[in-house]
Image (cartoon, rainbow, N blue to C red; front, side, top):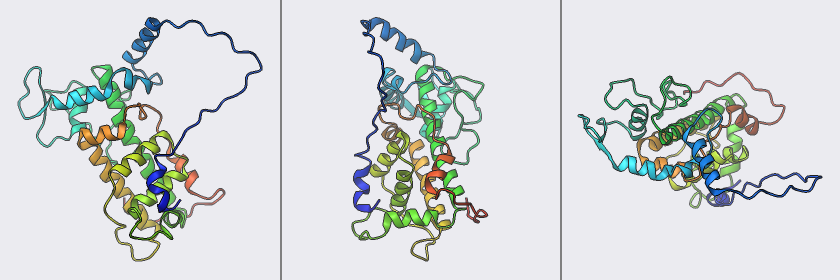
Amino acid sequence: MHFSSWIVAAGVLRFLPSSTASPLPAAPKPQSNPKSSASNASAACSSPSPGAMSPECWAFLDMNDFLTNWTTSTIIGNAPMIGTIYCKPNEIWAQCFLRFAYGQQRQPAAPMDCSTPTSKSCKSPFDVPASPTSPEYYYGVYSIYAIFAYINAVASALLSVTAYSGALQSAYTSAYAGAGAASAPNPVDATLFELLSQSGFSAMDTAFVTYMNKNPYTGDFVGASTDPPSDAVIYTSLVAVLQQRLKGIMTADGAFQSLVGTKGVWIAQVPPPASYVKAWTTPGETAAAPAAVAR
């Protein structure tokens, strides 16, 4: 995919449901009961549990309004006051949200950090002893974790792909070769976009590419002395961009909401790194010894 199609590609993606013809006539649908449907949705969305969280609950719980209202009622300060949310000085948005989600407003508990890919403390709400204090907090915490896990999955796959000589260079060439420098988007973003497009674009990929378009990276490949850059140089720059974007997403509610959107895309299973590695390498190709790359 070349640069001429890079900007519009995320906007024209479509996901078509698969269908199978039934040999039997469809049974007549029973008359729906709006009150019963609303009651079922309320019960499902109000009691989050592993495997039972639904993207539809994002809208049902008015998560975007909840996040906006939570943020506008937040005050930066040291001394907590009853009925007022206080974030600690220099505490980023996601960290403050996570602390309050677990009821740690007045405790000096070890913070849960989801803003750096190497963090060991960012976990799904179903993998910690405590529980978020409301369904809204559950869905907010899970989406923070899912974004963290997604960026880690992509970064982990990039590291694995460095063992396949030329795989990252091939993505760079597909994205960048033949495009006029003046009209081309940033080559780092373009290479990442090319890789995500090769993976088939999951809903999370699409959301992330849309966010990339709205928040373009302005740097270039660091340490590149050849064209195309080496796999190690491409890897290092792509991971640096992923780290930068993760930090930005978790630092401000506006950036976070710009990524999560309104449809609950992040309330889903994150694609495993292996699925990206499979898409980014030639079938049957054998990995060499891992390249020495800084992480």
